[in-house]
Length: 547
Image (cartoon, rainbow, N blue to C red; front, side, top):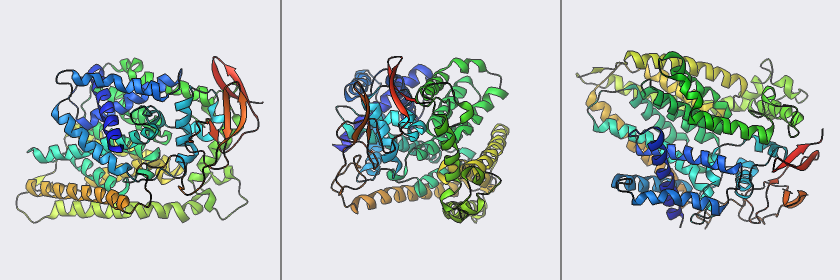
């Protein structure tokens, strides 16, 4: 059943990607890119619908069935498409089977928010129920819309794995195309190889994905298409769409906007059209959702909040802003227990606490990776052979590379100064390391380089698959699906209790993580704010603040 659910989901996403590409781009993208585009398009549909309706299984089923009629259209789905769907579904299956969900974030707000989407239309002031609902990612909308009559409620687990696999297969396809052709070595080929190595090394557990991994994978993808693309309006459109989708997943990666901005400012194309394009509509819709649910354009940045709205919780916004920064800088590990969080965040007072744990963690991850890259580079440069090709970078790519190095340097400075928790900004750091390391390659042998690439691709695939199979074979649970109802299968599930109600709209409380409960009781929170009031505003349920 799980494999059939995955194939159905991937087919539905892939067909949506083809539809979207047909209307907006009309280009021959790789099948993996069609899958990525499909995920973005479906996320937009889910966001739009949820303004007016809950994403329940009946609505979702109707939406997922509609694209399937295109199967009967001649040449819309070819044999190679089916092969891609089987391969991608296999990778999604081994990622998901007997896996655990992300701890503790999935239980605290990923799953509870997904259930809210499945059972409610947009709720004004939702972040007043739980502050974490203000940090929500667009990926929860993509997950929620996959709860249908075919996949069941466990369908909400599939899309995040599908998107991760599509990105992985995009880089893999990039390398396979290079190996098949007689082309010279390009910067993007090396970039794709080094990204694949990092994914196989570090981004290979479904339980570790959360909202962070998808955003970072998308950032790696963004840099790849930035390196490959020429400067046209169509490419500006696509870069803008990917950048906006990254921000909707992880606000700390907002600097991904540097890359569409590069084309927008410096090249002679009809730039202003982008202000009235699909990416901008998607972005404005997301901002509107943020304002209605949190009172802020971007939560919890106080300067971007509307203080006069009934549902704007100014005290919560200020507290979450300070607390979020403090925790990313090692607040729990401080030695001075009397220092205030606001003071801790300033003047590098946090460095001692942060370096005692977080710096060691970062070095533990990146040093082996850097060492492995250096070994590869040395082997490429100094393999004993007479027939060397010079590694050349053309002027256009060199311009983009210099721009990338400068913007990534700035991004890493902001990352390490403002929110230096590894999972908040590691794609900035890894991409910077990869691009700097490419400067160390100055010659290569055309035959040997392809053998190195082939060996490393096979090695990465073996590592990725072996890690999944090892986890599956050593699993102690009989449930093949990750458990969305409890972190511990042995514990009795606590039923959320009603705390506040207005007509049919009720807020429920549970003193542990809410998870996704079987009783269909949402919204659910494990932290209950006492100064909230339920109202009806503009035809929506609203959670306002007693001011």
